[in-house]
Length: 299
Image 1: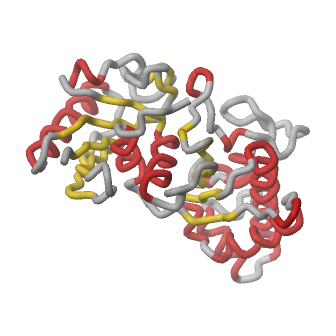
Image 2: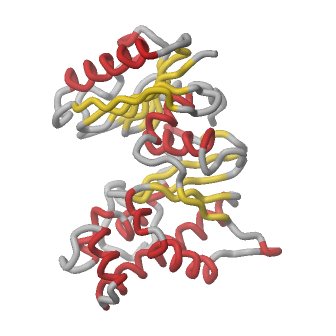
């Protein structure tokens, strides 16, 4: 039985796992710090060292390496084609040649989806989608049981759909009034007129009944519900998985979200989209990258 290595490449640290690709069982995990990530040599060497350490821990042959990274992969998933402004040297870097092993590269949000599709909240589901709610909002699409990457591997940027086309505030993709701006942690200060600075602070204010926090938070959750209902109309998923740090709000998010979904979701013949919390946490990128090795069919 072969084992697989998954690497999640971030700006300041690298997470690596050795897994059983059939069951998803993590047999060894490792975190390597890379400083500020500004120098390519730092994280390239750190990835190589992480792979070497994980390979030494393997008790079976290693089938290959899956690597999760920010940016848009090449059509053959051998490298990141586009990631401007971050991780200098990442664009076009040939990981298979560098590591002298088979490497498949995919977007980090797509990796999180793959972890859920193979071993988590989307296991056994043919049509699903995932939203990662954190500093920004990412996502991924599972269509007919396959990861959908789309033209130029851009599919799944679900945080960059608009909830307010009349907004004068474009997000990082130039979309005005995006879902990311409506609920992402990065915009809490702007949304709350400087009163709150993190989603954690905002939710605490909401739970205490503070009027501004209540208005801001429920408006954000309403936008999330409208977005999910819109995505359900477009893709008709069986399950929508929600992950990311904002999910720590738990019932403060899920209870009003279900209420708004009851109002906005189209439910012909009683059809209702199931909402699930992500099974995996901060390690989803590495686990999903390893899972991607044996998920050959992508569209």
